[in-house]
Length: 420
Ligand code: UD1
Image 1 (tube, protein in one colour):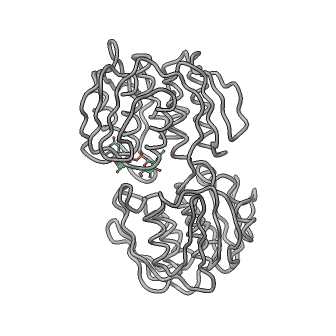
Image 2 (cartoon, helix red, strand yellow; image 1 turned 90 degrees about the vertical axis):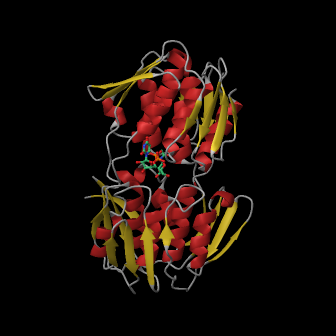
Image 3 (tube, rainbow, N blue to C red; image 1 turned 60 degrees about the vertical axis):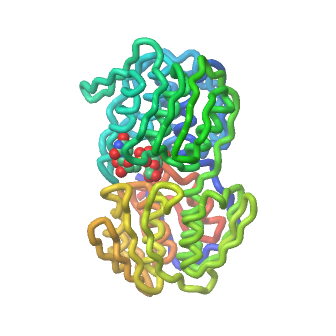
């Protein structure tokens, strides 16, 4: 099993570029199923989740014409299966995103019910209730969601009872080919939703209001597909910036978008780091400065992202003072805490908050986390710690960080993949 061996104590210095966004790539790959022509997606990150999604599309009969890692050309017109099987869905919860596109395009979809995962129960009731409101019949049997509609889905007004990125994406895609207009109220506002809407519009859909909490989708008879370049990954950018602060380094990240990282950049500036940015780059200077602790409260966009919470916990663990990190989105997303404490951090859990008392030094250890962002926080801790840290179960990291050891090594880190 692959592990990452980190030799701590090096300040990160240098320049890297941001990869394409994982959380934008996956819904865009699902949207392929809506199209009546070939599709070319570029700037895809080379990640396990993207590869799994490509396999899922292939399992549904989508023809992969060309794939070189960053670019994928497919022909969805040959799709011939309406079942997203358990073996693929269990690897990646985002597979649920094929439900809306398949249902609206073919009038039927069978998707293995995605279970809970390490960070919480993660229900999909909002996805299902929204599709029912559009006229779908939903049954759950043998661990599968079986959705059908007699003719087309019918556009309607759907007020989501809570903010969900996945439900907003799934319902937006379902509405693209529905009969009439759908209005999604209390929609999530994440930049990845805007990217998906831009992509769908490029391919022939009629969506307005994405990026606000009211999205209006006028159904069309067909969308033809075409090309689209995926946006940059704001969480990857944020993770490297957090690593720069933790290691008291200096870093420039290009091909990124500072305007969608506002909440994260504000918090990193509160640690005492100096931040400059232009249209598509961010520079952070935390050299020779111990970070100050910050309080973090996760919230839907434009609030502080839950996907950056673990990384800020790691920064706080070696910062000056006490920082309180409150997780409000998922019920079980402080799993990095136990492992950080094994490295000498001083973190107490109080309900859904981590109370982090900064320590002067962390000590390398053998650690393991059971989700993607928690694993990234352990790499950050390992970069700062004295001695060696062995991060196990790094398939989590490979789900979300393209070439993490290459990028970190280019910044001067001592990190390598080992098989032991
Ligand atoms: C997406 C992101 C994930 C990020 C999360 C929150 C992708 C592939 N994943 O996940 O990285 O951490 O947004 O920003 O883009 N909920 C319900 N019922 C539902 C759906 C969600 O109760 O039907 C709840 C969830 O349990 C959770 C909250 O809503 O408490 C937010 O979940 P959601 O925004 O749906 O997250 P994902 O789309 O799964």
